[in-house]
Length: 128
Image (cartoon, rainbow, N blue to C red; front, side, top):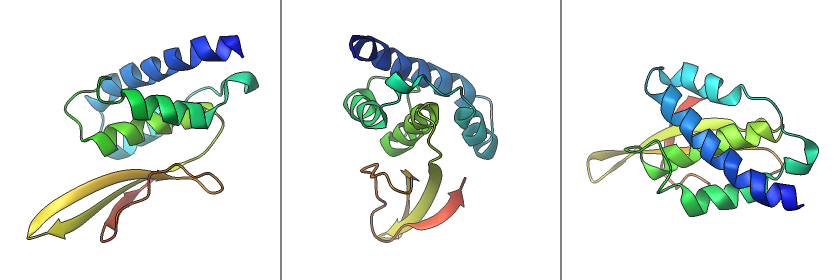
């Protein structure tokens, strides 16, 4: 358990650096597949709920900078949950609020509450 306390934050930072690197040079569909292609961690380190808590606490300060919080959070959790052997779906949606388009990114995973449900009115435009 002590190894998990030390290594899980390291994996969160590693995921953020990886996402920052690949998000600069790939279109969205390729980026999502690239982020998802990771080796699965040993069983004692597969803690999706801990990864989620760490990302929720730190995403503001982690790279890549300049992304909306929901997009950055979704990219990071996509990487980390894939490392847990999970297969989340990545979603982008859009809605119009007072005539202005508004986008949102989120993940879904059957049997796991990721705590990130799209708000009402978002129409999916991309799912991978």
